[in-house]
Image (cartoon, rainbow, N blue to C red; front, side, top):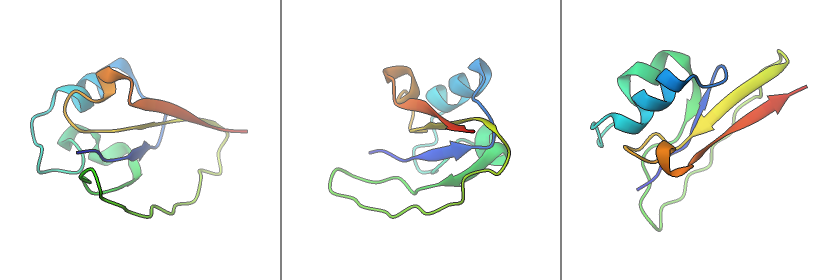
Length: 84
């Protein structure tokens, strides 16, 4: 199962730990990250599909994205969207 979340800033180490260690597999996003989320998908299984459309932030900066399923960020399922 996977999901995708875009955050409103670059992810801190604390954000990464919250995302990687939560155990709420029925939630799309850990409770600690909801307030900094720009957009996210529901959890999707192996054949699942979801179209995610959002406007990139207008402010220049780095904005993190990740799979918020438990443990997935520690497996490298995260990155940064750079707005210039």
